[in-house]
Length: 255
Image (cartoon, rainbow, N blue to C red; front, side):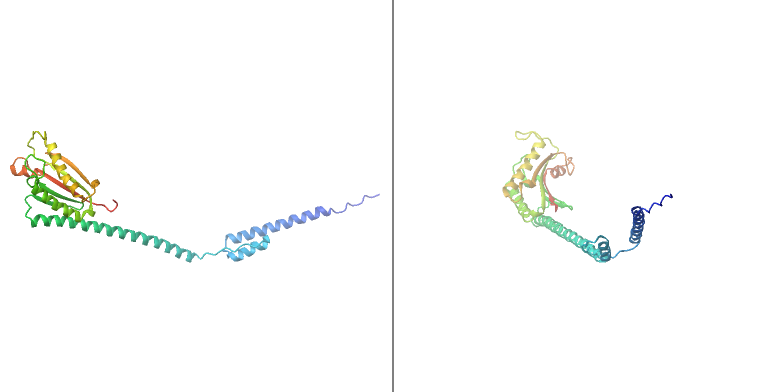
């Protein structure tokens, strides 16, 4: 008796059909991915396509116009630059105000000296950031002494009153004592160092008593005979070396 033919395996046939279908879907997916890679996709249509495949609603994505975004960026950068320019302009105004006030201080001191005929006893000079008011010994002190004479104190107080009117432009005021090179040996002073320091401190006390400038803006220095401005070989030269210098520094905006 002949053997009967085995009926086809329905389950195996169905499985082979699903493999083919899966391959087709995969190829279609790859095809759409390639299209997406080489094209510009409209956001709304892409969302619809994703929703169609997934069966879920996708929240709309806000589209940004590149031109509008660029304009917004330019506006922000422009605003920041404008703020920087305004800050720089304000800083320049402050600098100009300090410069004007500092120059006014110099002009006022020079005017006082010339109108009172004090050119032979007091001088004033200015560069960009410093004013030096130079008092010769003859107007403030007797020879070998460190006590300010009454008439010298009157003149010094006039200078201080001028400084008070322009004190906001001052960063620091340093009082420097100087002598000639003749040795000094007295009961009060053993050296020119001590004499120059005592004279600087005497002038400092007048400033402190006037209360026109903050104490942290005041200082003194003693140089004795070691920073002459003239020769010590003549009477006139030694007289110009015996002096007290008021070194006034202009304030800086960041201070």
